[in-house]
Image (cartoon, rainbow, N blue to C red; front, side, top):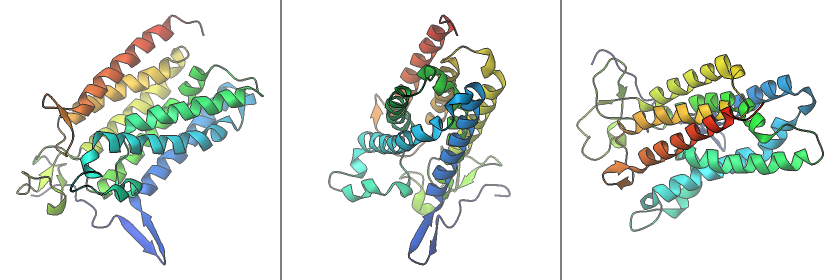
Length: 268
C-alpha cells in the first residue's frame, strides 16, 4: 500500500554487555517528564514544597511499575501460568505488559503513603492538590510511554487500509489475522488522546477546585480508553464476549465523574 506506518525493525540496542530496550526508554522518559512538570506545577502553587515531588516519586514510581505489572499478570494469567505459560517472563517488563489501571492504583497508594509521611514534618496542602499538580505530567508520561508499544509491535487494533495504518510483521499478528498487513495504530491513538488531555488540563485546570483536575484526567482518559479497547484485537480476557478492560474503563470513569462532582462542592 502507498502509505502506512512501519513497525521498527529493532526494539533493543546492545552496547557491550548492556541491552537498552526502547520500551524501557519510553517509560523512563515519560516518568522524567511527569516528575519535572509535576514539580514545576507544585512549587509554583506551593513554593515551600520544593523537593516533595521527587521524594514522593522514589516510592510512587516503583509502586506504579509493580502495580502495572501485577495488573497485567492477573488479567492475562495464561501468558505466565498453565501449560504454555512461562512464569519467568513476569520479570521481563521490557517486553511490554504494564497495565495502566494497576500502575495508577498502586502508584497512587505509594504516593499517598509517602506524601503523608512527608507531611508529618512539613506543612503541606491536602493530597488532592498534590494529585492535581501531577495530573498533566502523568498523562503526558502515558503519551510518551505508549510509543514503547510501537517498538514492541503491540497494542494495535483491527485491520485497516487507512493512510496511517500500522504495518505489523507476521510474527506479531494474532491468530486469525495472519493474512492482514496493516492495522489500526491504537497505541498512536491513545498517545494523541493523552497529549490532548494534558493540554486540556493545563489550559483549563486553573478554573477547577482541588481534586477536580485529577478526576477530570481519569474520566477523560477512560473515555478514550473505552473507544480504543473496542477496536483492539490482541489477546485479552473476556466477560460476556467483552474485554475486561472495557468494564474497568466504564467503572473507573464513572467513579472519576462522581469524584469530580463531589470535589465541586468542596471549598478550595
